[in-house]
Length: 251
Image 1 (tube, rainbow, N blue to C red):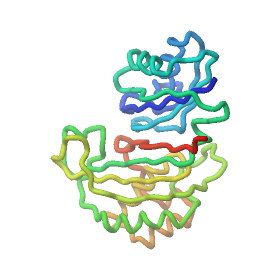
Image 2 (image 1 turned 30 degrees about the vertical axis):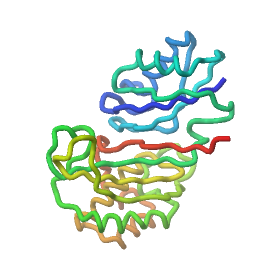
Image 3 (image 1 turned 60 degrees about the horizontal axis):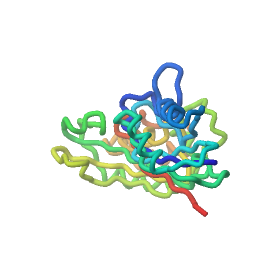
Image 4 (image 1 turned 90 degrees about the vertical axis):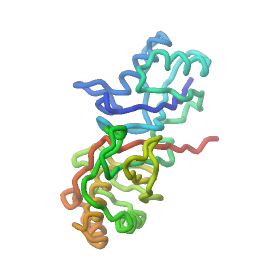
């Protein structure tokens, strides 16, 4: 029987979602906890890969088990066993053909920047020390919906079969981050049917070039059209990136 697990995690202590040979990953910790509880080898499949230091408000993973599980008890016992920086919110049985990654219809990421020193945002948002024109950055962000090939914002030599993505939302908003409001915080929200490796951090880095006056909106457009990672801006730090939401078409 197949189950979906919805969880969140603080990525600071992990080498990303996917199992790595040289560091602890979220997937590894979850596999170990499930295998201990269910007394069988469990290997979860996640909705996507997050890099080292990236956080998730919502990550979905699936696994198969021969047991008919009490999902409420599973969530309770997993949270007792898992470290404090990984929290399972829900477990549910799904159809055998549901896949955490391939059945997802949309994903949303948030990227947070703050423009003043704030001890409570350390490791959870990127502190910028230069002025940014967020209106101009939003003008450039709107251009993203006009294109589908985002080779310019992808890591090179990946195993992706295509660099085509459909972005349906891309905007910057001033927000309040938790209970702290000692520094201005801005959030970039981007939604697409799929994302390439490093795509969001590369887009944000290039939008920052626009916001600093180092690149015009027309130049931003040409970066996309050239399909060359070398033309885009640097990737911003992982600390500000969150996998925020994943959507599925449920029967």
